Length: 632
Ligand code: BES
Ligand code: ZN
Image (cartoon, rainbow, N blue to C red; front, side, top):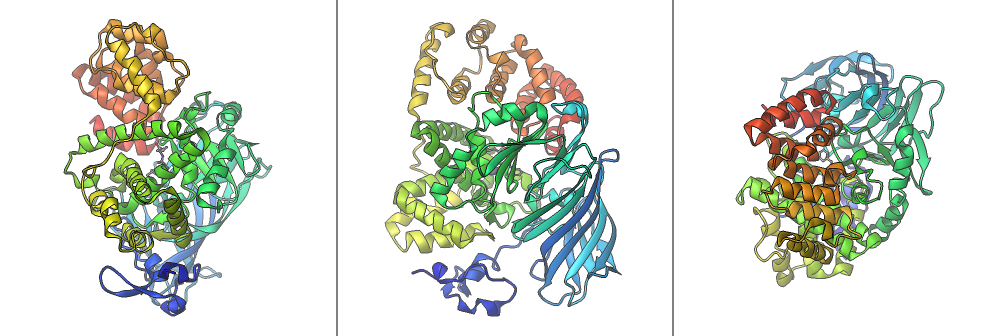
């Protein structure tokens, strides 16, 4: 038996004495540590938070807030139960663009002093509250700013129903501090309760146990019993209805969207069953989706119990649901076992992409998952080429000190992370790798972990001194080196081989309308479109469009890929659709390459600026931060 398994899990981390029952193991720096400590206490410092959790740390949050659509503010109190570990006289929170009104200690709310530190652009300010050695509870009265970066306030016009306003939060990576004063580090976990007051005609939902319908008071209460990191704090308010999918799953959406969503995501229960088969019981009780308006800046966000999802995956044919598999997979990789810092982001996303592909393979077969791997590999190659083969940002383990952690959000974490894990799977066989990952999730459940800790676990539980295996796994090459390791075999797809055949026929002159494209999924179409030559004649563009109707596709992935060609080739027929797309959709993954393509020529830049001027008010701050920079 290994040290990890002998250790009692779920202990309070407060004192080293309680750790006596854990067996020791040597660490890489020579110290002897218990595995409980390895799991939690010896985490690397988080350079993206002002909090000092080794001194005083939050354990539970009671949030009591009012959501005011007229002022575009959230105001109220965040009340924390804390552990004062060192008997310190201060606790430090993160805060950005918040108006801090007061701070109190204890149950009888004795006023205390607080201090806001210097402002940093993306880190915000430290909020230091004076406490006593025996302080158990700290309450902060605060109000958000109308331009809080985590919050998007939508007018009725920006919703599907056009009648009611809408609000949603996006806390990852370090935006929770723009709507709650909080110890905003993924290495710190807490449980929470919330009381949220909203306009009576709207429903509020959170990353917690949720109501399924509106009530007459407009006051909703929430409970999240499992400890979560701050970036998983989430709230949305709108004209929402709920529809059940399976016993444990369901969908929240605007009434105008709920039917389409229920059709699109009908398989979410099957996904949950498949996921549990691979990595064991789902630990969060319910798994629901919230379909947001199209300005949502991401494809999906894995808020616990309630994934937030873009409506751009409503393709009417269930072809883009790997995104749901991805967000569901985060319930293990990310939400249960969390990256301790944003330098370890690949632990969240690489594992999740790996798991997403496993779920899709379980549901739709290996040939299906292979297509996703090849598309992912194409993205990865682009990212590596873009960043440069020697760029340290192409290591799995990042160094984001002094930079916005958003800069780590690249295909390196996702796809290089995924291929690293696939490489280990190949080296030890699926059965053994599955057992290992199960052990990993169970050992670190409800804890945060770093790259080093994962690698320690990999060495002690899987490699176990087998040098030949260590060489195959090649930790150094994958984790601490740029690009892809030598000898890496690119993924292949038999379904894509057929697409390539059709493409080659077209290239040698066969008319588009005569190509064999029957039963192609949107992945095959995407592969086809991505393969098209950089430069095409207007005649070629028009022929393709006539045969396949790309410009009017209802599939957002197909559209976004096609627009890159229409822009490069000045195919004016697509201009109207392009403008409509850019003004409706706020998903950054689509916007960035399209605006970049426009930006590449003086004429295109003019077009981009004109569209952006109109569209910008529809975008979330996450997207405008990137696009302002791109189009400046
Ligand atoms: N957790 C991410 C989104 C994220 C990462 C937001 C970092 C902010 C900072 C989410 O799980 C995700 O990866 N979404 C992807 C979809 C996925 C299928 C690759 C997206 O939004 O495109
Ligand atoms: Zn993800």
